[in-house]
Amino acid sequence: MKQRIAEKADEIRQELLRLSHDIHGCPETSFEEVHAAAWQKDMLERHGFTVEMPFCGMETSFRAVRKGRASGPVIAFLSEYDALKGLGHACGHNIIAASAVGAGIALASVLDDAAGEVQVIGTPAEEGGGGKIYLVERGAFRGVDFALMMHPNTKNIIGRGGLAAQGVKVLFTGRAAHSATPDKGINALSSLIAFFNSIDMLRQTWPNSAKINGIITKGGSASNIIPDEAEAEFTVRASTKMELIAMFEDLKRVAGAAAMITGASFAVDGEPVYAERYPNSVMGEAFKRNMELLGEKMEYPDPRERFGSSDVGNVSLELPTIHEYLAIADTSVAGHTPAFREAAASPRGDDVVILAAKGLAFTGWDLLSDEKLREASMDEYRKKALPFRK
Image 1 (cartoon, rainbow, N blue to C red):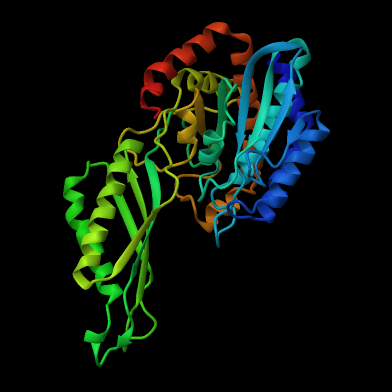
Image 2: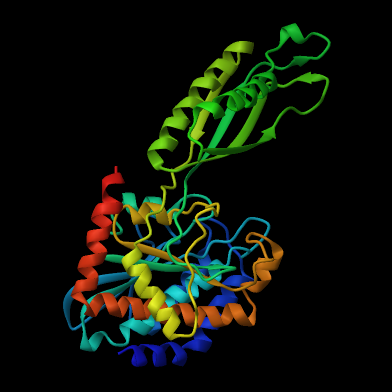
């Protein structure tokens, strides 16, 4: 069966690489991935999938379905395809999309001889907006048993976790006045600066894993005018979603105190929370074995390594999930840079599209055909992730 799956992936190689390069050459940011979603939909339909798009109330989300000869496990491959503002596909989401589509088509090619169902779920706005969060909340994963995806990287890694994260915007509103008569105004910028200083005092009360970074996006229009509006944006991270929620309450409290100093009013708005990630190690080990069959040695994450965040964490709270990494460049190349963007359309990047499609599809076949593997994956999910699902 895996030989048949691999042959199908090789058969559609040029289609997959064209999809990857088309998405790479037409970068679209969060919730605006019109072309990327349409190109995936068209390819999946050509290969026998039934595609629903828009999906779950999002214009650039989709669900593609192929059913086997009988009901059985439901395997979903997750596609990402949004670009970074100003940088294009410097996170390699074009490779994620093409590999997910390839895995879905390759695994579906053996469904006439198997019980089960294959889905490819298009998940927009990972870089900002939390598309998977909305998909989880709107029931996209009800009935799905296992979720699989890969991400380009500078190392081949399985089992990497991720921190919870949230974007926060803070706005202080005061009253403008000429700087010659500052007593006539209410200085919104002074409250914002007090808010930044208060955050430094808060840090010692937060867990060691907590991180916060912010920038001032509006601080006034001229030095001789008392600013009537001041605004900042922050990214807040913590080990868990619950820790993050408590930190957000702290931020609202100190914003109120900073506003009180000058008499300004304030608003604190939090974006959807990206949950921490619970990688399923049983599925991850199966992926590792499959990638090594394909000649790719996989490693485990360095426990001292710093983690980022992704909305796939929200999926990992709902069902057994893997989000593994394959190298498209060496370790001297950082993600979210022009060099990584170029690697995402390089010969190695193209090879990873096909390798990932095969490895993901092989792992999907393992789950379809091996009841013990399914049971072990579910047992780990129930013990490791389910207790934190709130």
